[in-house]
Length: 417
Image (cartoon, rainbow, N blue to C red; front, side, top):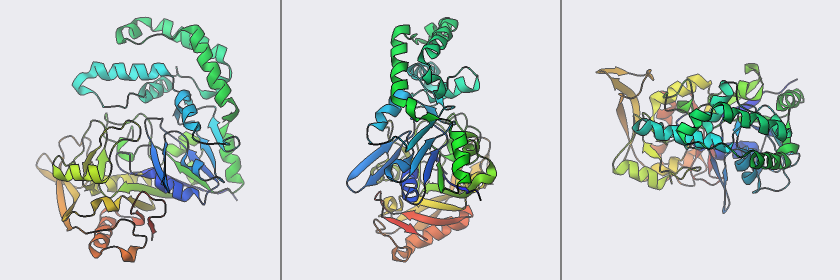
């Protein structure tokens, strides 16, 4: 009998703390598989006194018995991936890269940054890492896949021809064409470092599922940054929702088992775009300070605000969430009052769903009494009564169980209900 793959997905604007939960669940899974995104995202995992920042390598790398697959839905920057690999020993036989994943090269970052400059105050607020241009090349059918790295000479010729064809455009954008000889050396280096990890991961996924292995799927960013279901155009360039695991790994919807959605006990967002429950005053500053809300990849301060139950219901339904893991409950310690956005006001009307455009949505809040301390608590019954009431109210609002609660960055400070 074939196994089903459990899935972890972000339910907000990314940065929900997926890394800790993937790390926690990876202890009981044989394979951890990344299905989308690039190195613009990051997971921070704390084990003891050591902190790991992962951007492309699946979080299962921290479990010595787990194997890790990077699927075809990922755009992979070889130079950044190689640097990330240097944190770990003995990855041979534990790490597999899809030969169909698209390659993100330095010129993609140049294009990304040039486009943001040209947009001025209309810029999306990307990380400038080249993710959008790499996915754009994929959709335009002019991109290059990891399997092509195995023939550096041929790939070099393709890239040089691409730049020659688009020279006027790139000159206008200030994007420099690569030197052919240097490019060949660069690509040969990527082949030498990554060639032994590149394989047909679609066939591999089918084989390990048929072998009834325990599989965990992880994406990047969050539902509100999904290219279709997020706050377009202020979104990422990939499918971040649970359905993206099918196209990003070559599996079908019937292969997906339990879906765990990750959400903070409040909300954050990086970059531009609508964020109805954002707090601009002291409360937002306190959330940012207490939650150490600075980007894993960029270091940018995150925008902070209260929990948005309307957006969360949207995300729960889109993803088919079976349970929610509520992260960073401890960051709310010490607030006299904790707010939840329970509806929006749009054009003078109250609505309880995510509209086409959130730009003019005003939050309608419900307030809850705060609590003193949840940090480090490992049993639900040991939480303050007001914190338990807050969690139970969130469950009723979002329509699904909160089965996991994180009360600090530490691996063991986790409540399982």
